[in-house]
Length: 258
Image 1 (cartoon, one colour):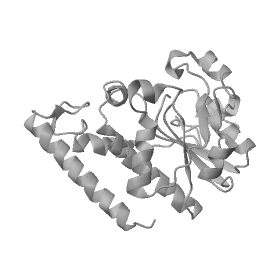
Image 2 (tube, rainbow, N blue to C red):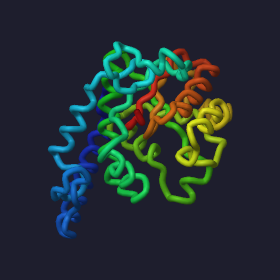
Image 3 (tube, one colour):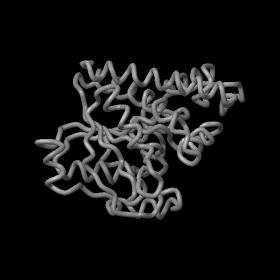
């Protein structure tokens, strides 16, 4: 990974930003760690609880869907009996969506603690670089797009926030090749309804928009999203990307419901 002068400047700007956030948090009384309640200045996760997150990354997971393995080897029982992820070549969730990870995500998405965006971006960047080493080359990232009108209504989108830091701090290539057609929030749908949306909620952007992003479809791509529940979102996105020329498509998510 080449770090240009712009990258270095951005890195220092972000360090100053974090320092300012920490100072402001300290002057305002700080915050509390979401897991243990200990005092923190800015990011609501203390150093000890961050270590717990890092330890969870190394738990054995299914090579297809990314769920934690409970005695199985390589592939979970669900994927053996009813394979859903047929277009995705592998999912790499960082953490299980349980216990204190739920209020952590809630603070980011619902309470709009955007100081968590660079924190989460760093965790995802680490996994992206692992895939770089595994395949021996850099792989472009395709963000799962927000539903129409979300940014206009809320002022921001979580995945777009993460991609901003991935691009400007770590120089990771971002290719927003997809657009979302459905305005219904996935979290409001049950499992059956989520599965029924496979192939319907997303589409490739217009040809003119794609031409500006990439001269040709890359052979390998990484989809990123916040939570994997049924897998319908990443499966739909992977299916669309492959039907438009991608060879292999992987997915990285912050959390997985398992």
